[in-house]
Length: 174
Image 1: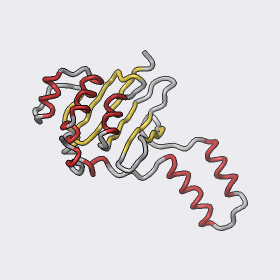
Image 2 (image 1 turned 30 degrees about the vertical axis):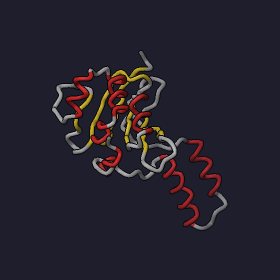
Image 3 (image 1 turned 135 degrees about the vertical axis):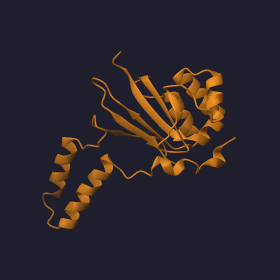
């Protein structure tokens, strides 16, 4: 089906101490209670869809190759509600563009950024044309630069790396 495609979700291992997040993972990834308990206990699982992120200690990486619209909606919502930072990448398929979703403490809601197939940020042509029009009458190079830096920040904002949250939110456990 064209509306089911790959989603990869990375979040702090501490989140597994929350029943609501484990319930969401069971739902989104169709895991058994035993599999989630093994994951909680730090046991290595022979599962393709979830496990420790060996490149980023303290993080869990979940993957669903058939996620509806490239989202693990239940788990993403549970992480947001429990205030655990996360990164989610959707591959995109046919008419659905690849995207990157994330949430960090202090944000009102998760944000979504459009990406290319290679994962790079981009700016749409209408936004570029608007910026060109706004800067056409400017003579100060600093003002022109500031306008284009604002445009770049909108499409590719500086985000605190998910690795910063690998063990930083231990007070959210229980």
